[in-house]
Amino acid sequence: MKNYEMIFIVHPNVPEEETPAVTDKVTSIINQHKGEVISLKKWGKKKLAHKIKKCTRGYFFLLHFLATPAVLAELERTLRYNENILRYQTVRAKKEEIEALRKEMEDQRQKEEGGSPPPLEETPAEKQEGG
Image 1 (cartoon, rainbow, N blue to C red):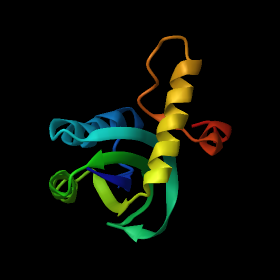
Image 2: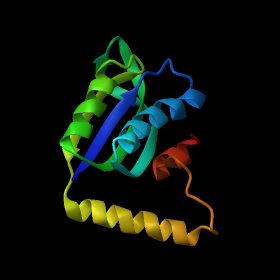
Image 3: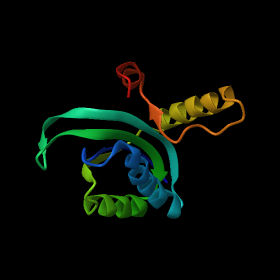
Image 4: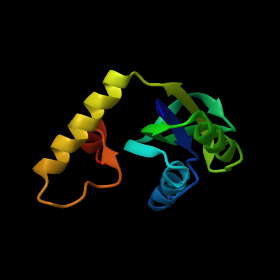
C-alpha cells in the first residue's frame, strides 16, 4: 500500500450539516477496498482562488490515507462523478509524514479519556474564526 494525501473541495450549496455525509462516502470507499484512513481534517468554508463551476467558495478537507493504486483509481472515479465535489487533488505522501501524523493521532487518542477521536478535526484558524 502507498501513502496518499488528498485535498478535496465540497460544493458550497451543500449544507454544512451534510458535509459529513460526503466525507463518509469518501472514507467508506477507502475502507471497503481495504485501505486505511489516517486522518481527515476539516479546513472549513474558504474562498477559492478562482471560480470553479461558478462558485467562489467551498468546504475544504484534507485526507491522509493508505491504499493501493486500484483503490485510488476507484476513489478518484467516484469523486469525478460526484456533483457535491468541486475539485480534488491527490499526491503521494512521504512515509515519514504519514508516520509522524499517525504518531500525532495516537498521542491525541491517548490524551482523550478512552473515547474515540472526533471524525473531523477543525484547524486552529477555523476555531478562531468561529467555525
